[in-house]
Image: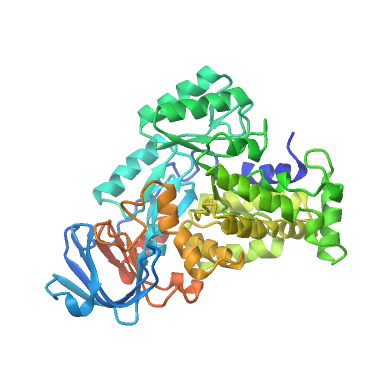
Length: 485
């Protein structure tokens, strides 16, 4: 049985476009952006006198030259020792070069969504619900005919019966679970996505078959058992801090997830809001820290998607403000309508005060993230873009700010958005660092985000497989998206 808070989330997600595997803008058939053609893939580029954030464990280096050729980082050296014989020389004085950002939890389907990621410095994404159309779209990106990020994708969600989403793949037995894993691999998907409704035996069979097929699996903790049991299954990553809040409830609070009423939860949250009791009366700091150690021992990563949580319980005024964001021009009108409908459904069910209490509850997510970080657990960045008001590409910068709000340094937040996320995806030998021999997925910035994380938005240029897109070209790509609706 879903707890009151899970039921609230189900209502919100059920009316959003996050999970359904298709959407009203066409599932790959939306507007096709045509950005200004970049330099050829084999261009020889030198960026001189630039500050480099290599994200390889060392600190920033000033006065560097980075050579890019044939899609790779050819050399990283001091400017004085590097000959200026490149075809294109870019003066990087006053600028900062770092790896492209990685969003490890998105839901993408349509052509128009693709340019929004590199336009915001996101050069790689992990998609959490794949479709045949997306596999075709990925090939177009790889061929250079469509500006977009590198895509690592699961197939459709594998759920139990009754499934949460009508278009999920359903497995009600170990044999069905194994068959779906085999089918997803044969279709060309990169990993397996598991969901709430799987029974324990089917979940175990999926996990085993994924290992036999050389695939990893990630997703949600099935309701058949808690998040701690999922750690023991060798799951690749748990999404959204799923199951964490229920697992760390302080028994002394009197609140029992799954059986207490939602009004009982609201009463406790009101007391916390009004200073009548500390947050630790609801969530146990010692249990939170213990669970982080269990996660570390199990080598389980968490993709917290704080952008999703912070956009989930918006009040009426906050939704109005979101609708007025200039970036909303780049979201398909049908998706905007779905987001508005999801918010309206919440407004019909909850008052603004109750929505604010839900938001207060998720302040605990910052403390969870801080404990996971302190324990040494992998915490790659992910936004859950396509959920209401979690915007493709743009929300990565909000996610970075959330990491800093949780207490991480700017450099640590950037690390989990680059080299740390690349390690999660198994791509650390190719991307995520400014190191000779790696692919040239890079961002050139006008200011240093390791000093102020807000500077991550000050993008002067983005390199995708060594192809350079100037700010003007990125802006033109965005305008093509907006004009295509």
